[in-house]
Image (cartoon, rainbow, N blue to C red):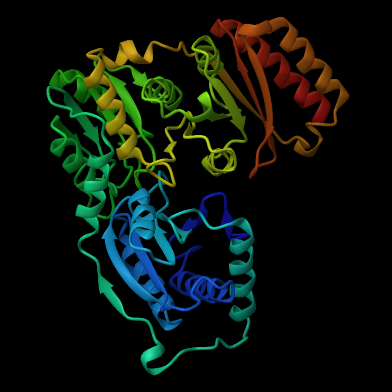
Length: 452
């Protein structure tokens, strides 16, 4: 698997890459590293452990719980709940550590482990590095210092987690959702029961699809990565709109009443205006990434709202928000972070607030999302090139400059080396799709000749 920790925890094929032994070892290592960092000082350590419905989550949860308890950490097992619920409960219960077992939007055979620090925030990179090195050190033979007797951790099921999290979601809503008919696609995932309960309790009439998880069907042709079923269901049921989550429900995408997709950029735009109106959009700023559609930036500028762009990945969005005190940020993929109420992307919370805006304004979701117009976007992957030279090639820099002059203020060029493959991604936005394709094709040819 190379370096274990990626941008969103440790992921791999369950029982091949991500084994019970690895899950147990990482959990023990996390407990020791946090103890050495002083996190547990002066009290008995506690961890919250949750998972999505994947079949492999059952044995991986057992391994994580065993590892933590063997290291002297008391475990509150919350069962199947969304990633943001585990993050919220870690903070709300005053736990020292949170652990979520999920591979998010990945296919069922994958799984992952994500650690949260006290307060429900993502572990610092430095702590992840120490956990990984500590795990490697002991995997090769160095013995653990193990507690015995009353020093071992105790394990209990925290069945109140579901209600505590749903109550938190309802408490955030500025108004009820009475009169709205909403289709919810739960991706047969972690929000299959939480999300329908929250929307119904808030007053909406709901229709659910993808809400029958069996351990094997998570993300299978449904959810935020497969919107076809949701689009059809919204039209079939005459719903006002639809909401789609991914497997661990940290994402939210939507479909308007006519079945048209509403992506994360459009959702951010709608929420930014709502939060500004309520006096909650700190610094009059919203955080996006370099992959945010140019139409989003232009729309926000027209509304007098500043857009700060980060690298691709919700971790970078969150870092910027925390560093500068911004309240709202997110990605085109549907990761939306509302920092006053969540420490990570929360798909259910995002969907509820989007619905609340529709209910409060009396406008359709299509009307609200119309505040921005998505510019056509073309992405070409150029394989088998020296991606390390993207920023140093004079030939490529000249071609990009020519393309940017040609596109002017209504277009954009972005070249990104892949983080995992020997290829360069060429992304071009323009007011016209054919223009975008033409510019992207020419740039892809230059990438091949300059870096091949």
